[in-house]
Length: 156
Image (tube, one colour):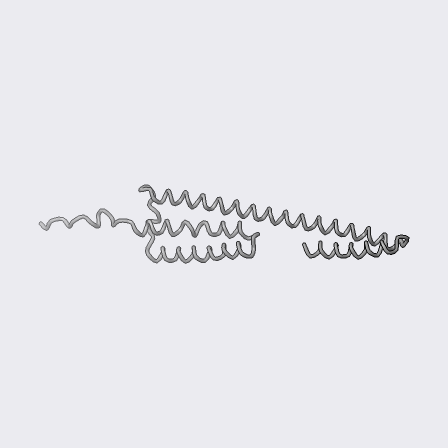
């Protein structure tokens, strides 16, 4: 990376100094040409690495933007009466899904901080847990069954 570029530049400066002091020394001239080629190769490698890193970051950013769009879509659906959520959900399901979201969010934050190449996978693995609390909360907060709230029939 950058260190290799600096080291090859340093070697080129030393080779140039030696070649300047001994203009007739063919070995010094060959060393200068070789060190110049090494700088070019180190720079090429550095640029390719930077472009790959940028590509990974762009891919991660695109994945994050897609997840935000999915979550916004889910939130708008959540607020409609047609969305029933997980009708079998209990309070324990809501708590479990919130824990799963916290764990996957921590993994996503870790990827953002230290492993940018892991951002797309971490984002995909967070999307399901991000939606689950919404589904479970909506279902767990459902009103009681109509039959359960009807009064008992009068005694005969």
